[in-house]
Amino acid sequence: MTPIHAPFPATRLRRVRQNAGIRGLVRENYLSAADFIWPIFVRSGEGIVEDIPSMPGVARRSVDKIVDAAIEAHDLGIGAICLFPYTGIEERTEDCAGAWDPDNHVNRAIRAIKAAVPDMVIMTDVALDTYNINGHDGFVVDGEIINDTTVTALVKMALEQARAGADIIGPSDMMDGRIGAIRAALEAEGHQNVMILSYAAKYASAFYGPFRDAVGASGALTGDKKTYQMDPANSDEALRLAARDLSEGADMVMVKPGLPYLDICRRVKDAFGAPTFAYQVSGEYSMIKAASTAGMIDEERVMMESLMAFKRAGCDGILTYFAPAAARLLKAQP
Ligand code: PBG
Image (cartoon, rainbow, N blue to C red; front, side, top):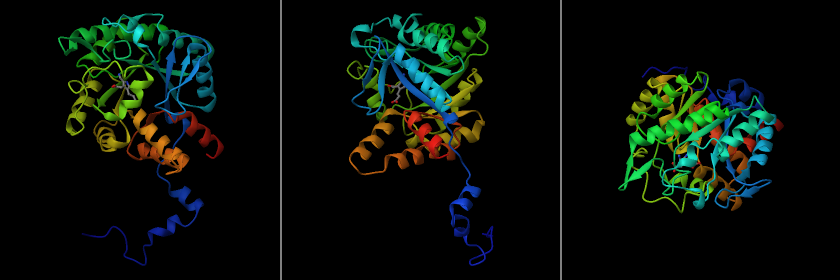
């Protein structure tokens, strides 16, 4: 093999690491608050900011407090916020009608945020799990997740979010055909500018455990999601999914979870060059929190290192529960 540089001692790769100034000069990737999408949880009531035991430092907020969070996100320069509903078991039904209720927690939150901070970018979640009595992302008939009737419901759900003022629709359900169906419905109703960030490569992952607690689904879920979410053993399939979703009209694609799937982020970015996002999911967040609480790691440094890993792997942005903490840190020491 021909060396690409002169041999030692002419080449000393440590030279460009010798001080902070030089390291800054040769740095390849940067993090900015504008790269972050902050997932937040909306619940019923007023004046409520409620801790989530499985996710230390993350809260469920009533709509009025969500507005405060959106103002904070805007002040910190965070790129977008992503709304997830918390629905208690008593609010869940088999027909999932809450999902397309124009006055559900999420749709009320969208309107309230748009009234208070109109230029804050709002992303939503499209899937039935947060309204479903059995915790699945689609309708369940005789133990099976029914694809096409689920897609019809997802379209209704997405349309209500667009009507409320959502900027980015985030289908996280993994049903086939949903991106094309949602895109067509948005176009037909004049929402040409509403974007779709498709959860294209979403794995059936144990890292979602704390989230299911956060949205009230952990007790509800019967069985697993392996007939619609991806097998963690697969990689080529992620490319087929991203290609499919982009061809159906997705503007951006996501890989989820994040750190255990950095190889997928890089492949998707290299293959399509489309705006690519990773979701640093609840389990990834809570592991870092737990290890730092136990005194095993330095939380701030591990947080920033884990976020930088996504940029290095080719991601344009990151959905992360660390968004406000990381944005504050970047503001203090850019
Ligand atoms: C469900 C959904 C999940 C997450 C986002 N949307 C969980 C699941 O698929 O069961 C997980 C997010 C996280 O773990 O932080 N539509």
